[in-house]
Every structure is written in structure tokens, then in C-alpha cells.
Length: 171
Image (cartoon, rainbow, N blue to C red; front, side, top):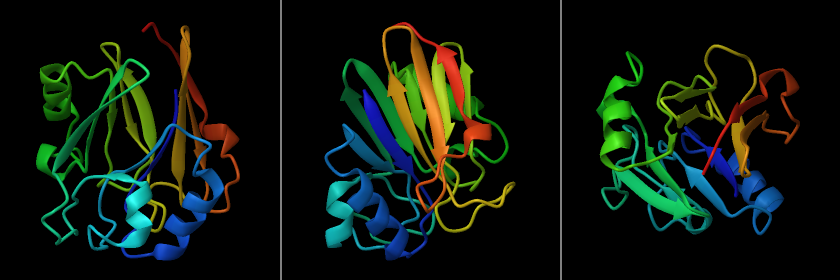
């Protein structure tokens, strides 16, 4: 499985369009973790699996999303409804409730990936307004039978090599 995860584009079409152009057809799915601030039926968003963020006013976006790709159960949400700026505990409970082994979320604009009880929790940062680091960012997640690899990229599609992480992983 190879998927791209982006979040918190806050109305900027340029970055989203660049990601679409660079990766459409090259990954299994492209996830947007909310705060696109675009209408649900905006043409650029048709490529993305999306959820509603606290700055998205179009109620047609779902708050949460569960997808299955290559045997992986992926739970995605923006994060504001689970207080992710304080703790990942509420999100952990929700992931267990859905038997998800991968969780994507945004909201804090801080990139990071960690494995908790066999579940990957990933925040791709913000493609427009990063916090905690200077680079605008998104992530690519690749899995195989032994590992799950997370690579972060900037808005110019350059790999942030100091941010790469790899976790042992069994399907």
C-alpha cells in the first residue's frame, strides 16, 4: 500500500493542485484530513478522500472516515472532535472501536508519526501553515509485510529526510 496524506490547506488551491498533479495515479489513495476550506464538490477535491475540519463549513464533508486499502483499516478525522492538541487517547479509543491499524489526523499543524499499541498515528502537518517546524508538509505512507514507512515532504515535493520514520509492522 502506498498512500499520501495531507491536511490543513486552508483555502489554498495551489498546494493541493500541485500534490494532485504530482501523485494522481502514483499512489493508492490521497487523504485530506480536513480544513481544506473548499466546498465539498470543488473539482480539485474529487481526487481526495476527505473529512471535515473545524474550519470547513460545508456540512457534506463527513467528520470521520474509515477506509480499507490492501488489508489496512484506516481511520481518518480532522482531530478537533478528539482533542488531539491535548492527547491522542480519545483517538486511540476510536481507532480500537473501528479496529483501525492506521489513523490519519490533522488540526494541530504539527507533523508527526508514532506507533501506539500496533496502530500508526500520523499527522502530516500543514501544507500551508506549519507549526513546530518551518516546512509546509505532507506525508507518504508505504507498507509491506514487515514495515510501515512514513516519509514527509515539503510543498516543493522535496523529501524531509530528517523526518523519515520506519516501524516494524505485521499485517
